[in-house]
Image 1: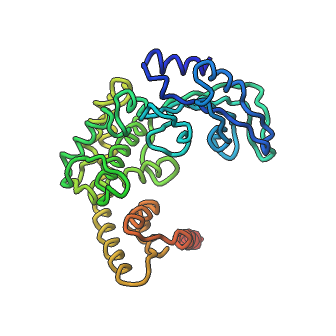
Image 2: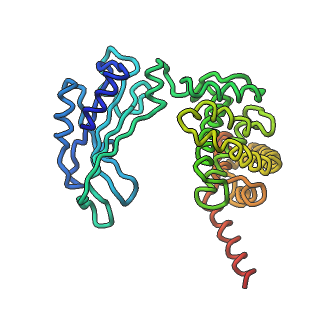
Image 3: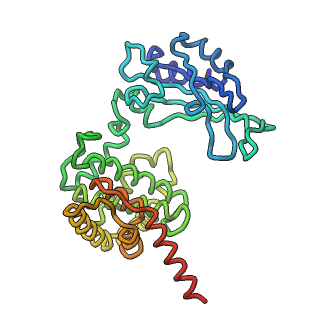
Length: 345
């Protein structure tokens, strides 16, 4: 039924051209002791010709939530943006024009240190990529070109000095302007939804993930796009206006979300200026020598004194063609913990 529902929704409700669709199924894996998922294959053959029903290895078609836990074979639906060709060789090949839009996972096993064990109660987990579906229905070549992102890009541009979003990627985006636009928009959405759901930035667990996301977004905005201080909180009402109809909790908690982001952004603002200045000096010094590695001690100073999470320093280093001594950073972190422990004795 899950496969039938997926096909019906895509082709009959949304009107997606069936000639552009491909399905994959689990080809089996001897090392796991699992046979091919011929049941899924045969169901797809009711709708698609054999050359568009493709067997794939466990790396693509055996879903796992982690090293342990529920798992099972899956079947995917892929869409060819170009059409009118044989795109089978491009499925699961990281081609930007042949994208996975739906995944149906048959949760049959639990994985632990002893291997796979059948679950007493099996179920199906099915999911679809909202932005990917919107991009193909709207005839866009990128998720970021869909209508849901345009208000955010306009709001960012109103505060930026780097010019409007241009849709460039890879080497074409040499000044990272469009990368920054995409990152800021994504981070603004993520933070707005997460805070509405009850999470708050902090120095531990999921809270630290949010703090890192916000600091990365603010850095992209201020350093790369030339946005004025405080710009990030102004994106919250745009997210709420865009998604509040479907997610009423965004409207209910809008004021609280703005306040949390304002406080976080303000606290990081001064440290951001100092951190950027420090890194620019570091980059110039490394550029005039034979070295190309930010030491663990330097990265730890940015973390401990300037509030820059390690992954943010690594991102800035990568943009400058540098690397970061992560092991050295970990050693500095451990040394600080040891000192703190000794001080408490």
